[in-house]
Image 1 (cartoon, one colour):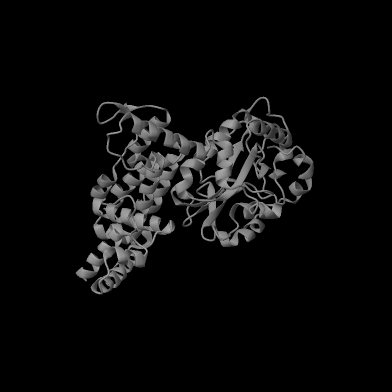
Image 2 (cartoon, helix red, strand yellow):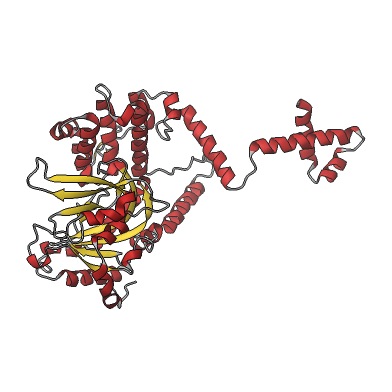
Length: 468
């Protein structure tokens, strides 16, 4: 897994890796990543808010690197892109990199070590665990940022991506991996900028310590995400499917007389991700610009916050809820946290491993859980809204059956099945030919032999033709 010659071969590439390469590797547009925005953030002391953020279209990724002055203090770039101009998990558009922030100076063993020495020790640990090498690594002043570029993912893939993040951090725990810096809305320092809080002035300028290959081709040479996840997660996706199939087989053997249950494809995390997506679609459909008017915001924000509590890492749930409430409800940060205190309290309890009494008195996850039908009722979603807003989860039984029919039709089409209308037309044509042959004295067996089909097929076709 680990290329032992990489330390020598990548020396020239490391020296050539600049802020332009870094931002291009994270955000440069291609066929699968042509729309969206990323954020360049600056920590400032003279403004009312300590953070100043500017949004850049991915179309301008090549120019963003030149907008950072060499030696400029505390400049950061978001690791992923977003819908709109706000940086938050609920607005993530494309995910293109896994990463770990290693605060090695918080570890006694490494606090006085050079960034390069820490990095190569970390590489040995990754190699021992059969985990791939990062695409690049940057010395951030007081630590390291290791980045694994991978194929673009939609927001729906966040649960599996979060699992990869968690396992990478666990692998590098001895080096001070920051488990609070794993969320998809994270920003990290830009190469060439200065860390004003660096403990060692010799490392205050952010610089690369490792590059996997040609700096100009890092995005093109990114890992396939499924391959990367298969190397990092304890069970590969294929193995997970095998386990699911084995469990299904055992259930069938235990009760062969039971009616088959419909397949379930949504986990708790992906279900609430789908709920949150539908809530945003409904909001944009109902309100021009997506801004919630007075009287419509409390219920929507509460349900959205409950969904986010199941999808966002626990350490950033409060920030995500506050950001959404400020933007869409016009609340202040303290007001948002106060109104959503029950949601936050339950999310923290779940993160601590607590279980509270459920509806039947049995221990259960303390976070709020709502069925789709309950949310539809609370928001009074109409059948027309379900169709026009293209909702997928927040639907009534009639719309759910309609969607199932559409998915079945599309699935049959992907498998090459003949469309139903075409089948009916061909049967009608056969029936008319069969009636003509039958009127001339041919038997059903004769007609079946002439047409190359079964007698039953001829009989059905003739019945269909007579009805017309």
